[in-house]
Each structure stands twice: as structure tokens, then as C-alpha cells.
Amino acid sequence: MAIIEYQGVEILRKEHVVLKNVTFSIDKGQMVYLVGKVGSGKSSLLKTMYGEVPITTGSARVYDYDLRSIRRRDIPMLRRRTGIVFQDFQLLMDRNVYANLDFVLAATGWRSKADKEQRIEEVLRQVGMQNKSYKMPHELSGGEQQRIVIARALLNNPDIILADEPTGNLDPATGEMIVSHLYDIAQSGTAVIVATHNMSLIETFPGRVLRCDDKQLIDESLLPIGVEADTSAE
Figure 1 (spheres, one colour):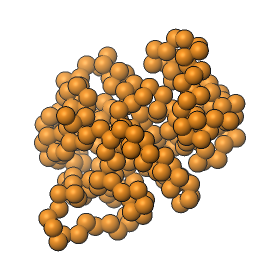
Figure 2 (tube, one colour):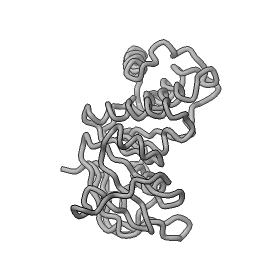
Figure 3 (tube, rainbow, N blue to C red):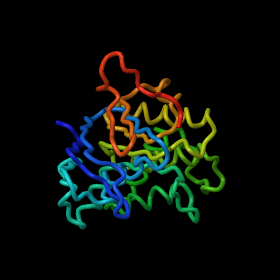
Figure 4 (cartoon, rainbow, N blue to C red):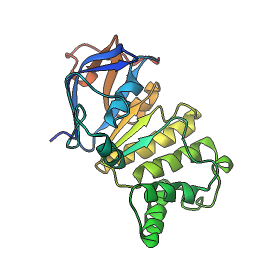
């Protein structure tokens, strides 16, 4: 059964249609790239998946949540089960790495100090940052901060990770390292959806490509044989 399923969805921002008739499904463990020009609807589509942008047309489901009828009080639980990686990191700059991760665990219902310590150690090791827990965000490079953001997204063992331009503020080598981490996470069974402009990353770490173009969402894996996908950089 698909973990995300949209049928005939229309996405609006400030009463303007950014995407229409959006229909797709995503299974666990899929690596999916969301591509398209700036303003084509990539970020808006991701935001519907965690309840930031409402859906009023068509049908949309993430896990067992109906996004058209989800109650406001259920949105925090939807987000707890969904890891979100932002381009601009959104770390708390007044506390160290450990405290950033501890804050998220406390906010999502973890109470045991020992359990929190163990989980923080696990996710930092997973992204190769186990020796950086005492560092303040400003003491880390952009790539290191993004690895902490991925660790934060992993804290609650999500079945879905949404990454909105996670390499946008990074140099090419560091961006490739970040997508390599996300690719490994997908291989372990988590659905990973990455909005990106960097088409070379898709060649290095293959996945399914969904393209936002002219208010449509095109699944390039379904293009007819002989029709080549547009892989030019935007």
C-alpha cells in the first residue's frame, strides 16, 4: 500500500493555482526527486504533505491521514512521523547540537533522559557527526549543519523524509555527500522526496523523477518509450 497517495489534487497559494490535477503515489523505500523551475510548485507540494498548505480539491493521503479533512490537532502527529529537511537548516542558533536534537525529542513526547541520549547518539552516528554534539551551529560548516538537520529529521524514525532543496546552499561536493546520506536512508526503507535543481545528483543517485511544469506534475518514469526526459538544469 502506498504511503503517500494523491488523486486529482489542486494546489493553491494566495488563491493562485500552482499545480492542478496532481495524481501520484509513493511507496516506502522510494527515492523520489521533485524537479522544476523556481516557482513551479515544488515547495508548495511538499508543504501539503505535512499540513502546511491545505488541500481543498481532490483526494490526498499521507500515512492514514486524509489531508482534506485532517484535524488541526492531528497535524503535529503527522509531522512527528515525517522528517523534514530545510534548505536554510532552521537550527536553533542559541544552543548546541545536542540541545537542538533534545528540544525536538522533548517536543514530540520523549520523557526519558536515557532514551533521549541514546537516540541522539544514534542519529548523530548515522550522519557521521557523533563527535559534534557539543558544537554550536555557527561553529559548523554548511555541510555539517545540513547533516545535523538530517539527524534531526531521523529522530522519530520517520517513514517519510521531505527535503526541500537540501543542497541549495552547499558547494557541489558537499551537496553530493548530503544526497548520498539521503539515498542511503531510502535504501533502508524510508521514502525520501527531494526537491532539487541539481540534475547531476539524479544521475549519481538514481531515483524516480516527478517534474513540475506548466502547473502539471509529470512522472517521468511513465513517459512513453522513445520520449526522453528533460534533464537539463533549471
